[in-house]
Length: 205
Image 1 (tube, one colour):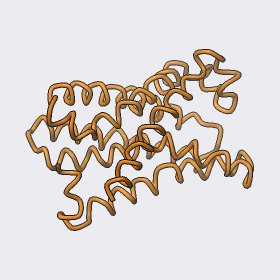
Image 2 (cartoon, helix red, strand yellow):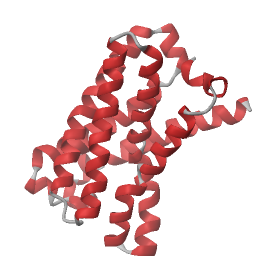
Image 3 (tube, rainbow, N blue to C red):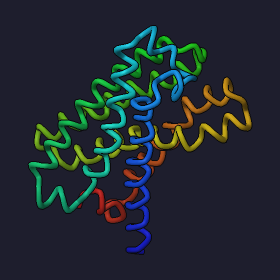
C-alpha cells in the first residue's frame, strides 16, 4: 500500500513537470510551429494567450509542492510563498484562459467547456486562499484539492487529445476534450472529499 502511494505521488510529479516543460516548447520552437492549432490566439488576443501558456505551466509545476506533507510541516513559510506564486499564476493564466475561450474558433460547446473550467479554476483557488487567510485550514485544504484537480486538467487534456484526434478528428476531439479534461477530475475530487473522514485523513495530515 505504501509503495502504491509513493508510485502515485511519483507519477503526479513526473506528469506535472513533464507537461509543464513540454508546454514551454514555444520558447524554442515558436508558437506557429509548436502550437499551430491555437496559434491564432497569439494574434487576436496576444496578452491573454501568452499569460496562459506561460503561467499555467508554472502553476502545474508548483502543484506537487503544495501537497508535499513534509514541506508543509517542516517549512510552512515556504509552503505559503509557493501558495502565493501558485495563486498568482492561476489568476493571470485563468483570466487568459477565459478570454481565449470567448474567442475560440472551435465552436460554442468548446468555448463553454474551457470557459467554465477557467471560472471554476479561478473561483476554487481564490476561495481556497481566502480560507487560508481566515485560518480555516481544513476547509482551505479541501478547496485547494479542487483547485489541484482543475490545474491537473493540463495533464489530462494532453493525455486524451492524441486519442481523440485519432478517433474523432480534430474538430470533434477538441470539442470533447474541452469538457473531458476537467469534469472527470473534478468528479473524482468531489468523490474523494466526500469519503468518510477516516479514509481521507491523508488530505488533512
